[in-house]
Structures are given as structure tokens and as C-alpha cells.
Image (cartoon, rainbow, N blue to C red):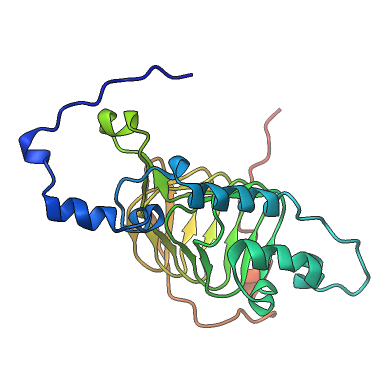
Length: 248
């Protein structure tokens, strides 16, 4: 399907030493990926088998019948259904009961996705977990949020060799990510942040801010939360989204 290309001769400044090559050869492909080194995931039996297993699991994520009295997390049971998430993310049933993930969703491997607590993802979210994706407690994702660890080098010769790269992504506690946002490799989002819909996010962002744009930047600083809002608080009666009357 693709034209075969000759290997480019190594420039002297890029020549690895014998010790460096030995250290690299001692690493599995998965270990190379976790360290940010170039790796060939499609050429490794173990990683390819892991991706196949993840695809089998995530496409057998049936929706249960409704029963009166369900609470939010009950909707994502029963335990037989949660076992799919246990197998995919390699977590316990107790941890799976903290997850509310609307199908369909997509991962590369699953086991590189880490959850620190309660988590909700709306439909069509994508987690390319060639490296670790860490979600904090009470993280909420709108539809179509994409989190990318896996990427490719701008070095064309490296891409011609079918090498990938992967860098971890960390998302803090109490983060809300709007629909269609893309979180790029190596990004760190602090606690209490809101990411605007459609943003393309790369970099390190502090706690308690609103992030938005392409590329994303800090739009607003927020006060740290004091606790759960009181049901009698007037803020609950104020519309967050202001609308204007359409002119005829």
C-alpha cells in the first residue's frame, strides 16, 4: 500500500552509542512508549493484542433497561456490565461503580487511563492512551471530548519508519470540559478548571481558571470553591448562559 523507502544514513551527531542502544533494546515497546521514546506499536505483538482486546470490550457496552428508583450511577450497572469497564481499565468493581461513561467511547488500550474518583463522560469521547491519561475526582466531559497522548514527530524520517510518540496528560479534580474540546499530548490541567467547547488545549494550566480558544489560553481566573453550593443560594436562580432576543 505504501512505497518502500530506503533508510537514511545516520548523521554523526545522531549516532547512538553501544550502551545507549543496549539500554533501548532492553526496553519493551510499551516501556519505550511510557518514557516518551519513539516506538512502533503496530509492529509489536503485545501492544497490538492489547488494542484488539480494548476494541472488543468497548464495543460490547450494552445499555441496561430502566428501572424506577435508579440513581445516576445505577444507570451504568449492573455489575455484569461494569465488568466490561473493569476488564478494559483493569480496575476493581468498586472503582468501576464511580464511572459513568456513555457509549460509544473509544480508547487505544484502556489500562493507561487512570481515574482518581467520580467520573462522567458523555457520548463519543476518545482517549488515545499510548501514555497515561489521569483524570481527577469529579471530572465531567461533554460529548466528543478527545484526549490525545499518542502523537507523531515532525521529523519526516521518523514518521517514515512508522514510529509513534506518546506523552502523558493529567486533568485535575473538579474539571469540566466542553463538547468537542481536544486535549493534546503533555497537557496538564489544574483543579477546578473549565475548558470551553471546541478548544484545542496544550500546555500547563493552573488551578481554578476558564480555558478556551484555538490554541487555548486562560480566559478568566476563578475563586477556589468553598464546598457544595447551598440549595437556597441565589446563584442557582441566575441563568449562566445569557441569551438575546432574536430580532425580526
